[in-house]
Length: 147
Image 1 (cartoon, rainbow, N blue to C red):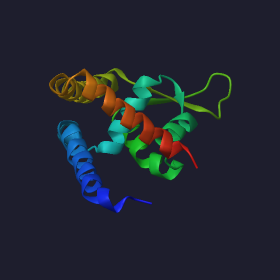
Image 2: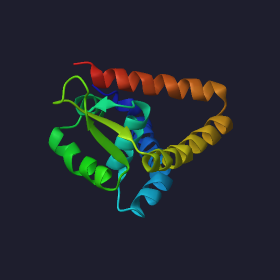
Image 3: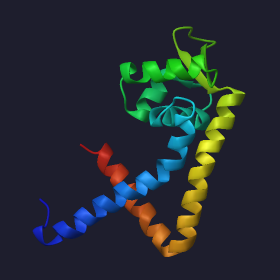
Image 4: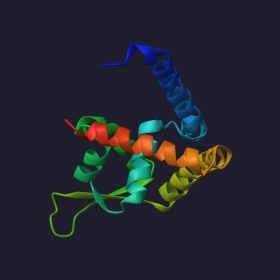
């Protein structure tokens, strides 16, 4: 149950999170839009880049989405030659994903803008604020994973 005395503070936190995330994703969204891509494409590029040769099933687990939700954007990225899709050497039923050189360049550009954004925010807020932010984010992630 939410403490009624904190409703205004919590609503403000929701708005701050919303507007902060909007600012964090604005520049990458504009870069993606020029290519006819969206935020889901960025998530795919990001996590494939961090997990080279990831199986499609592993990516589904990380993104916590269905095969149907992944199918169209992944197909678009492979058609644009940003992501390569190859059969696993040991089990041909398993499809593995990796970024192509163009995919690596785009992912680096997108993530680079976000790293600059976070770096500037952390520098302005200070180490104590950064540590607090990280702790809150860690707790929110853990809460998502718990039943």
